Image 1 (cartoon, rainbow, N blue to C red):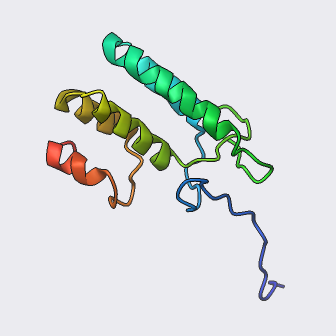
Image 2 (cartoon, rainbow, N blue to C red):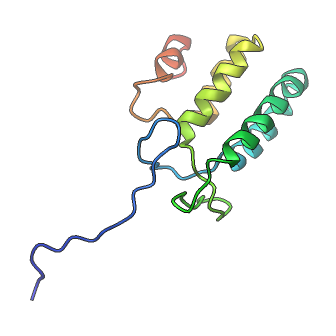
Amino acid sequence: MLPTKYFASEPQFLCSVCSQAITNPLCPTCLTTEIQAWLTLYPDLRRGLLPKLFRYLNEIEDKITDSTTTCLKCGNKRASICPYCFTDHVLKNLKKLNANNIILKEFFEFFNFDLDHTGYSKEAERLGVI
């Protein structure tokens, strides 16, 4: 016998920046670790960007609540911001640091979370990445 009108109540985890559902629960800390590894190729950019990212991580630490989702990579409850919003923040800082188009193109190749192509993917298209 199949149940009729069965509705499971699953929690919806929303990004504290854009208020959209977090569909790729990777926490900013894990993403920062990956960005650190990538930036070993660009030491000057690394020195300029990482302090900004660490300050941002400290700021968003206050936004972690009981309704924060668990990160798929580290297993901690700290995915309070979607990967798109976090990588958008990183992209803006890369631009402020005058990262060249080759570096921006590489960033898009490795860290593009604009899956519906409504945000920064437009710039990636302009650079010929996607």
